[in-house]
Image 1 (cartoon, one colour):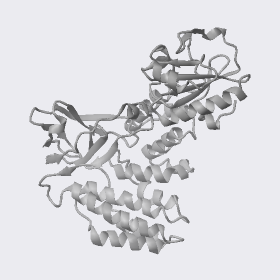
Image 2 (image 1 turned 30 degrees about the vertical axis):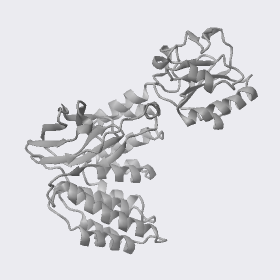
Image 3 (image 1 turned 30 degrees about the horizontal axis):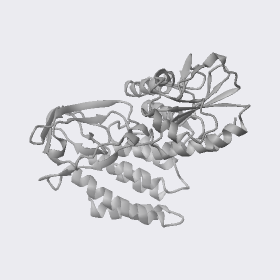
Image 4 (image 1 turned 60 degrees about the horizontal axis):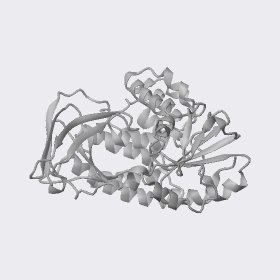
Length: 415
């Protein structure tokens, strides 16, 4: 196939990580809006963000200045949590970076209570950055890539010739460099383009870019391509020759729920085992089949509820917060389905607010206030469900055993 031969020629033989001597890297800057704050510069050890490496931390001085200094042996994408933003940059061994931070904006209480909230990722700007610096190369490459990607998506159907033309155009604007990280970065962005050829997807991209190559744990472009390509690949036995890749594909199937969590116990390679252990710890927090230990509850009116005295086929549990529009909508749905299914299900609203009056106001139109409680009065619920955020949903059976995690939202729930 013409495309396959063309892409194979484009793929360097240098994709494996070379060992490097650790060198001192420095990141510094000055911003008065961060005075007194503690900043941490960190990197993820995998693309699923299970294991983090702290590169350095520092307190911002009285004049707004800050400085990170750390030993680095390989290029990393690094992050600094900056309130509503996650500042990011690419750091290389032995280099110094003068960065500029965005004006500090704190996360709101509603942000912190929302499990779907993520700080906005922001590529930091620099002072006096060399034109050939990796950050500049990636920014220029992404601009060219995004333009060609948009043009490709307008082609129906997308042919090998369309993809070759797009790659050639990018190469003409951003010629290849001798920077190994950049070589890897561009090749795994191209893997996404090759995967747009539906007739050969995902096999062609996997065979060309993944099967004979090492897993690049610190390469963000590798993980983005992997995440997009491998969910649609089910012939995992064909990956046996590359054990780390095979295990990574198995773990992804566990992550998306296509394989049971028990598969993680068979992971062998050291880097993957570290990820698998973190996955197991996360998934074992509250899963279906676990029994929730609840003794008694105090509702928002001060009434005591003895859990074992309740008689119900199912209990539908909602963690809510009055500051979230999702929770306010859930209250309206509970009002409707609570009447409809009152003989089939008990409905319990657990609010994470600290203001009981706010909860009472939000629930004033509910017919039944008896099963409205707060974590402020019932802190044991946070431990029982290992839950601190709203909104989230659970279903228990008559023996307090979890049977749906997560459960559907009230508008989609039927006992």
